[in-house]
Structures are given as C-alpha cells and as structure tokens.
Image (cartoon, rainbow, N blue to C red; front, side, top):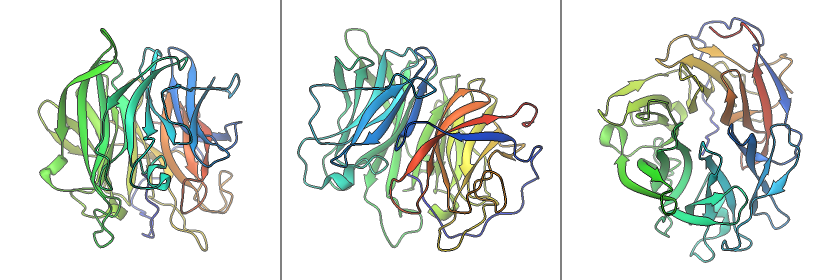
Length: 353
C-alpha cells in the first residue's frame, strides 16, 4: 500500500545528471495497474477493474498486444484477483485472490489493502492453480506485496497483522511483518521452511518488495526507525545474518526494486516533489546504488514546468524492471483510492551514474 502525504519536499539531494533522465509514456491499455513482467515468457501481467468493480487478472506482451485474461475456474466469481509476482520460469504467476465469503466487504480486499485474501499460484494458461498461503480471515490480517528470488527458489511476501491505527503515525496503514519461504514445484507448487521477520523487533508499517540475485538480500520500506509513515525509509536486510542497512532518510520512500544486474535499486520518493493546489504530496521514481549512494531522480511528474508534469498530483508506485534501464510501473493519478495507470519508463543512455 502506498501512502500520500502532506510533508514538505526534501531539498538535500544532488542535482540529476540529465533533465529529465527518462522517457515516460503511457501504457496503451486503459485502467490497467499492477504491472508484473516476466522475461522468460516475455509476458506482462496486470489487473483491471471489471464492470462490477472487482479486479481481474490479464496478460499481454510488453507493448500491450495480445491481451487475454488469466482465469481459474476454482476461484470465486465477483471477487478481487490481482497479480503479485511471476515465477522467473514464466510457468507460474503468484496472485492474491479474495475469498468467496468473509465477514468484511470487498472494499477491504481491494488490491493494496489485501484483506480477506490468500496467495495462490496459477499456471500462465489459467488451467491449474494451488493455494500457497492461507491468511486468517479477520479484520487485522491482509497481504500485499510479494516477490520471487531471481532463481525461483524463494518466495517473499508481506502480511498485515494488525489493522490500521488512526492515532499512530507509524501504524496508520497497519502493522506488518515479512515472510521468506523456499519454493518448489516438485509434485505440485508449494512452500516450505517459512521464516518470519519483523525488522527491529517492533510493530511497524512496511512492505517487502524485492530479493537480490544472492537469494539472501531483501529490499523493503519500513517505519520502524522513523516511527512515521510520512517519513518511511528504505532498507536492505540479509535474511541469514539479520544485518540491516538503512538506505534513505530523505522525505518518504517506498517500493525498492533491485535492477536485474543487482547493482542499483529503483524506488519511489517524495523528495523534491512539488505540491500542487488541492492535492497531497506526490512522489517520483529515483535510483541509487545498492549501498544507498549516488541517488538520482529519474522522473519529474511532480515538478512544475517539467515536460513530464501535467500540473497535478502524481504518485509513482510499484514497478517491474524489464532491464537495468527500462521498467513498467504504476502511477496513481488521484490523492485517494486505487485510481491510476501503467507507464513505460526508459532511462536515457548516460543519465545514471
């Protein structure tokens, strides 16, 4: 879940090498969101709201051509379904699926909220599916972001364990923990050896987003040190040693994703973002080296007068990298609610240190 905030933009970061360093164009399929790219199959999975308001899963190529739904007959009708992560082989897609019956409403299960939903894994043709993670069916629990390791042997995911607390700046989006499990499709797809992590050992807001090619370094955002959702920071953690590295302190930052070569992290941040009239503060994409150095702004959707700005709030969201210089990602176009689009972002040659 992404948070839109009122905080003032940070001005401490260095000027970018290029202005702007990226080319940003809209993905050609309207209302699509939640882009997940798979290199092996050259396929993009995403969600789209249907006529009844529930999200369904679709797949296309990187250009938006050859679109088709991913449907499994064993899932309930008229419930939210949303892509979470491709297995790198391209054979399976991990998804969140809202339960057929539960005590809350479907609003609680909107992608990004993730209440009353479970993780499933489905074949790319939609013919077979298996439940991977069964989440308690109550108001406190929910699931959001997930990822496979680049070699496909590990699955990581985010679980909310306590509902949002309106009077806690750290827990305004709820209290979260991260899980890491071994994945195997011997016999049938399943998880084993699940380990649970709560960075810092205290209740916090946060989401795990990516795992590096070493199969042990995860990237996530958290409030456990700042104590403030409006000042969330990005970290990496070695899941074997527990060693933590804090990579950002500027403004608020989320959605960290390792580049395919593992040398950089692309993320979103409110740093230096202009605030437009009658809007909350938006965010743009940035890139930094894996150790947190050499931070550079990639997009200028929230800078007045920029060719990438429409003079209104834009919130850079989760992203999926096609290469070290190319990603597809979500942009929220309204301050509240899951209203947005997918954009195609390419880093221009020579613009990133």
